Length: 265
Image (cartoon, rainbow, N blue to C red; front, side, top):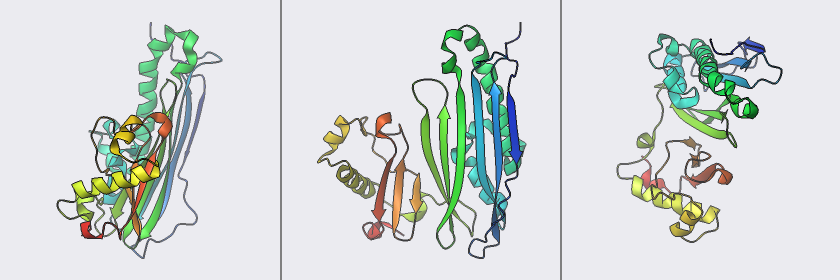
């Protein structure tokens, strides 16, 4: 007998979400557009069936270097790139977004169907959500900062919120990484500066006190590739559950460029 996977509710809205107020990005020949996919799929035909919500609002660019820039966006982690490996459509933003939504829903039905059939008393545990909203900022000339706000829930006590950021060089279409901003040997000094700011933010005096709060409790202290650039500062982002307990939430460390001037290229 096949899984009891009758689709009871399908509310699928696919819109090009063409932004009527498209804007040029520093005369670079680029414009902003977006793709929206909203889908709610019930796991069974039962009135109170668990469901999977997928809501994607994905901004992309058109124009100069658009294929390379959009490729960087697709592979930034916002669409869980494992879903797209080997998919020849992944170079196309529209195809990639729709392919991801379809595969995510298919996997939900496949993975949760049998489990729910044997555990109907815990129906709420089989709800699932993947909610993605994106935005762009132009913090300085020639740089596009792509910001993804992602909420994921796959059962359990709570979902996970993430802020994922990619800074893209509009001239080359490539992602700007830490090694592109900082001189060789920057890592140790920058880690110390981040810890200094973190202690100040949490009103603590030592790394040991941070660890007592279960922040960097495993002794692995690192500079995240998740950061935002602006004219005067760089903000480093540690996502929810990344280096601290869930109730601590997202941790942001903003450091003025004047403080790290000797480390910058």
